[in-house]
Image 1: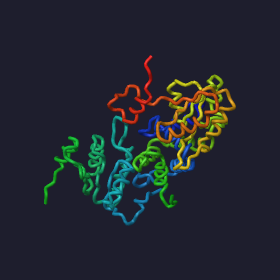
Image 2: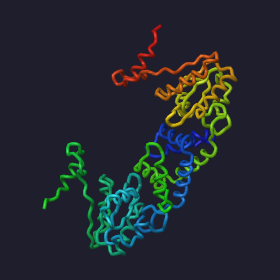
Image 3: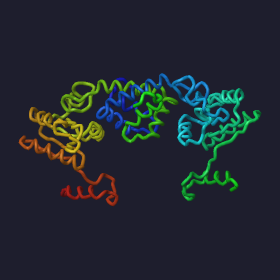
Image 4: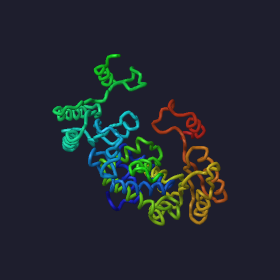
Length: 200
Length: 200
């Protein structure tokens, strides 16, 4: 970034690093704060810098937290016997909102990708295995994304855990609730048929 | 904003004040800075706070600037005899990019709106009239938006200037270049027909 650029254009450039934000949106954001909500701008600036300084990975599950151990890991009421492995903190938020899981999490912060040089170490998989070996975990639910890399990550984790006597499951992928079959893409439909279950 | 909320959820809320940014996008922005680009986050935070502190309205044309008088007002090579009146700093950027105007600007920072309590004083119209009276301006181009409020603002400004012996024009509104007539909305098409010009 050149320093002889005006402050305003530097500000617009700084917004443009955000994913999906182009020139026009970045302009709109900069002008919004300068014309309509200077207080909101200052508040955002303060929160970004405080968050960048204070938010780190939970020493246990790698989720983002401002404490050493995150709120979920520290919550005694949650079921320690079941761990859900997800790719990112936003997956934890999504599952928490669904209200359908009361166990603990492990956040990989990515997925295996030899091309991008993402190794099992980068995803903390040795730490995950260690966590499981040193505790009373009985089931591991793998909730990685239904992509080639997410599948590979899932297989790798399963491989690492086969020596332990625990149940390893993967969440169901298929037709979303309320979805019309004709609008569902082929891969999803294939997966839904492959993953069919007997009606009891 | 409650202070017992986690830093992360406060950060997500702070992004949500931006126009058009909902919960999901705000989450994505917060996680982007925390997971992928902490340096970019710090840079944005610094630029927002510096900009909010330093960027004010130009004392002459009301455009946003970090100096007392903005770059365009201070540029001796630009034509002082013609002033283009726009609603916002982003309009100045758009016109500058078109490369079709080499005069000066006056930025209203809004448009007349009795319902929202926006008065001529709020838009600096007395200052605009004073600027014009105390200088060698020969033409005023009004480039307010083609909305009811933009039209009202345009009429009001014209009214204030009729005593001066200057040309007052308004930019042309009509079918956009490259646009197919059948996809142009009725109001625009009406305006294009109303504003028809003789072919020379």
